[in-house]
Length: 293
Image: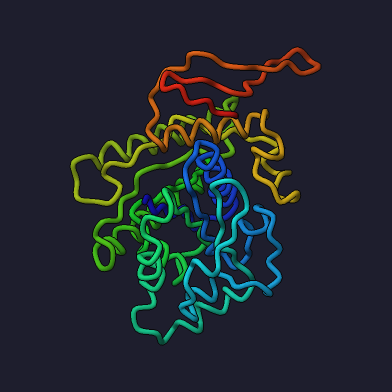
């Protein structure tokens, strides 16, 4: 089971969009996936069609009352579950302040679910508080969504520092394995300059004893796409809301990278829109697997 924390202390860089749609893409490829919403804003919960009204058990009950995850998570699609959040989770920071071992509560509870899923994706709040520390303590990998702007890149140093501290004191196995470029605009020179600067920094870290020594920038670029902004209001992933748009294509491609898929495409099915533009609907790879985009 791969346990992945999706974090960035800067807001608006595509954390929740990535957590939800990467999870949905992995589920489309037959993986059993659970999204844990660790943000009191409950955007991932809403995105997956669940109203965060505080009536159902949530991640607050998991962290504060040690309620088993199996009693909290809800199935929202084929191969896809969510451990929902609500505003009560904001109180967890205060209520856990005096609890010994508060940083590893989630890690211990996830051990009860070992083998239940192929992927656990943790959508973290845009902060580095006790909720994010629980995610980092429970995770084996960190994915960082990054908008290719200077200020977003500037905050990476603090984020790397935090992962190094957690790896040193709490979770020695924690590694930053992937950085995904979100809200990408190929027409701007700034985007490529930021990516080049980040790649240079990562290259300098190779063969060093830091959690990001083997981190890579995913080849897939998540392009700015209005459909990705619209689908949360319908409580749907991009694969249900607009399965043939660029956003769905990008997250399907990212999922294949996460799975390490290097197979060759043998055939693809496309459809033409009213403007004569082609969109890929499904692909057939050398391993015989058919996947819908």
